[in-house]
Image 1 (cartoon, rainbow, N blue to C red):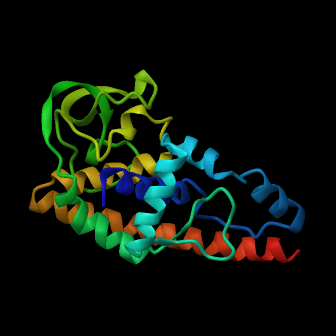
Image 2: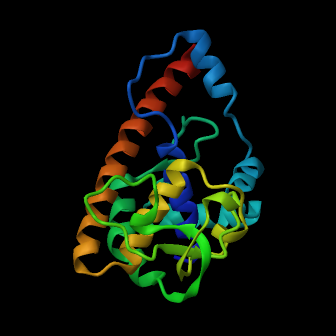
Length: 217
């Protein structure tokens, strides 16, 4: 597993988490058709959304499929990436990535707040002060940047890619808390990760159910 493979996995799950969780009202046929057609993307468009090359995305997908983290079902919602084995993804993000892509403090400066300093994370954990930030984050508006302790991102594409979706930013921040956290922070970060992946499972199941109905009609 290369760093880009983990980044693509986080982006794919984050794309799910950026969809509404609740309340959910089943879409009528007209609304369902418009919903999926408006989100249809080619592989090249999906790669552009993640800020990677098309070839690189295909390579990462193959690695993730081989690791049992994703698969391409016969029917899947266009534009939402591949089907994710969220149980396996949880194991990798909770226990593997901490050692595969360890976080290192690289200095002090301006960057995108991450870990429990992400404003989207609601946790009983007190955010560190000064905040943890991703070094040189250029994927967000400058008004979102804070001055704090800089850490390296899980992959270079975090810095060069397009703006992060809310779900991706939230998931990436929890993963960063796992990458750098001490035992107490690590326990809370893994608990937050479990909540996010449970939500992602609900969203993924709903999307695939709706998409099957959309394809039938």
